[in-house]
Image (cartoon, rainbow, N blue to C red; front, side, top):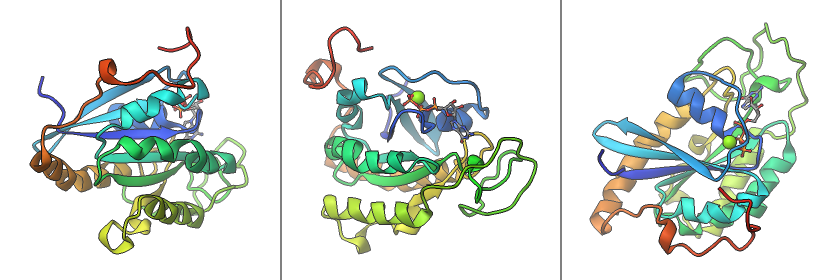
Length: 235
Ligand SMILES: Nc1nc2c(ncn2[C@@H]2O[C@H](COP(=O)(O)OP(=O)(O)OP(=O)(O)O)[C@@H](O)[C@H]2O)c(=O)[nH]1
Ligand SMILES: [Mg+2]
């Protein structure tokens, strides 16, 4: 099998739906999940490129592994749950720092998942790729709706904070409105749009990485042991 040309990493707190988003996109279904241990990846062929997409564990005990998975990443998907404000705060407090090992040209997508559960979210009804985020209406949802705790503007504000943190010029990177998504792994809302927008955007990053030297991969042997992982509980 050919080595991946580029890497995309999903980060975010436990239970926000990282594994579910990836399974919805790659396997076109919404199976029951168990909390991820360590990390796992899928390979996606996009045009003539092989892209690896890494699913990481949100649980605190695996936190130290995050920066290893991010090493050389062409894009990072920072995921939160729109019905859980704390999950967006965690991205800033715990996860953004893990991306310091990513490629210098790394792209950032901010993804608010579980919109199907929120009062303002879209209804159920299968894959809805291509629609704008946060569309109201749609019936047929049996589960009680929750008050939405995070608005798209909050995600846009976080994206702008990332640019400041990375000292990037707003004019030289994709606009916040292009990089903030609201999704539902359950219904498929915006899931194709998220991944495929990102695939198209990472191709130039991959070409840039190639021009700069050999691709970086996860090298477990050369990484330092995670400082915050207790012995005996790691994958
Ligand atoms: N209603 C709804 N439930 C979701 C959605 N995405 C995930 N879930 C549920 O949320 C729970 C957690 O989903 P996971 O995909 O395992 O979450 P995760 O972010 O991978 O969690 P860790 O692996 O622990 O970091 C599961 O019960 C999923 O079925 C969604 O879009 N809508
Ligand atoms: Mg998971």
